[in-house]
Length: 251
Image (cartoon, rainbow, N blue to C red; front, side, top):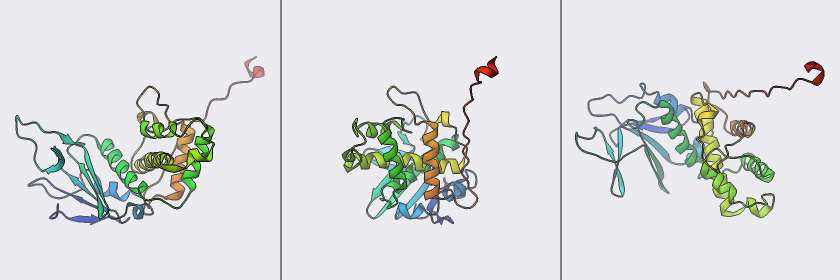
């Protein structure tokens, strides 16, 4: 890792690509340069001192994680990981396995943006736009969430979510961070590639998905807070509901 070439994208995001033995260190084949450059420039300061390494393989070794540059020998089994995130006061390190997502560029992008979004939410942003939007939605006591984790925290706020005590404290902070992580991750992924709403959710009992109109509002709020970098844009298509024909028209 120390020998690999560390790059700084135009937006200030720091990353590196650890090549396999005999292979050139390049990010062009997987589009990693464009992936890193999709992180909004105004969001990068919230990441603190952080860096991302794209590595060949990640392997679980007892209580630690090892980087492998070659495939497992024939007959040997090992527990391979998709990513590893190390958060410390001295800096944050994100490792992502390229071989794990060898045939899944969409999964690679979602993994990367989700973890970058998580690091961003560790920093308490002073702007209240997104928390205010969440408070409004919670007070309506309706809707759903983007992930089961966010929905679980939201349910824990209590039935009377309009009470001020329900939108303060540790539980509210956990819900806000979970919901903001989901929104930021989805927003950045949408800047990088096409995202289909129906692909975001798996049918799970007791977990209602976030209504499309609320997804739209969250994405636009995040877009105002962290505008896309040059060369990227957020495109959202809202299908208008069909109007019922009047009785006169029916006759």
